[in-house]
Image (cartoon, rainbow, N blue to C red; front, top):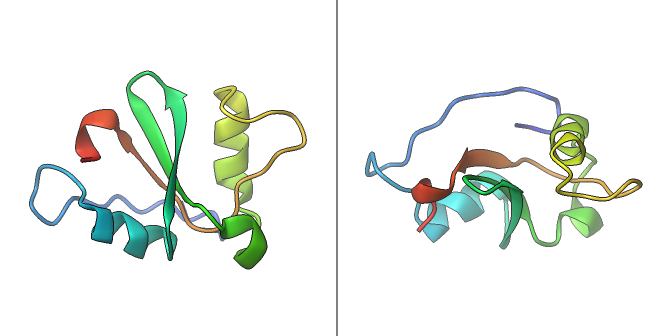
Length: 87
């Protein structure tokens, strides 16, 4: 999910799981994992709040899943994927 609200499906380069470098490319920096539910992760930029614009779509998703508290927000591009795709 981009900061513009665009949702683009992507696949891991190896067809099975995302490697660290791939995740860092998607979020444009170091990664942080936000647990949306036991089986789903949102990968965000660890330093996004200091460098990126607010991602309203990602923020709404994280808030609805109770992954962030009221008043908190997600910045930058994010990747939402099943837990098993992050190694």
